[in-house]
Length: 291
Image (cartoon, rainbow, N blue to C red; front, side, top):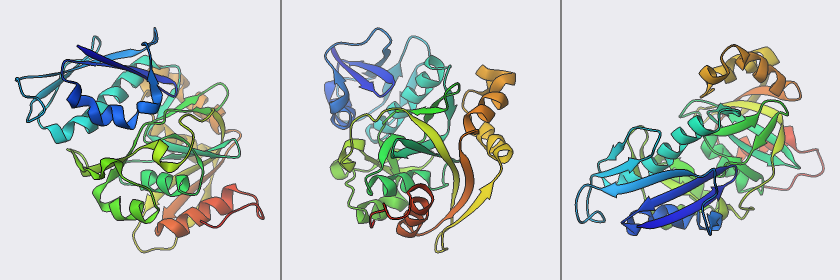
């Protein structure tokens, strides 16, 4: 049995499998986060196969002590589903955080939070800002300390949809191993390691100072519209994974979090023009660098 332990920001994961080739991609992406031994709080996930030649074909099974077994039919779906399985454990294991369907980056020690549904363009926009040397906190899964309003790091790989492959390459960012994987809800996807953007493996927690709700519309100029804190709280509640955990306190916790932030809706189009708009918002005039 082979065992691999990682500390991915505030999330500790241990993978155990008799077939190490099955986790080659995951280990390659997160090698800089490897631990010599598992931490006491590490979530344990076991990966097994239903036959004797797992590197050739499926099905495979993901197991843990707290969630039902999950079967993965094909090898090309394994990495996306493993990432998804870890996310479900995060929801269960880290309930004290506000858990949002959001991406987050930071500049000058201040965090930009981008909540939104799938297809809103937040991952591609995150990649665009990382290409401009912003600090990476998370993609798709934001963990916010509700008492301090701090966005904590969970630097998982960015999952890039096939329609954005060329955009990401145009930013000078390499998709991992130049491979495409299959994700049932998104089709073909690729993965961008946070380390391939040239940043630090883990950045410190940062106070949320800007909250932007992006909506991607092709071939339109990007536009920001300021919104109230109340509207931002309502929209974030819709994107909160653990509303049931906080129950009646959810709105109060979100309201406390946005108190020190300015909030906007963003219509995003061309990635370079959209990143310019974001930097005009977040970086003082005279200190910006050309993207």
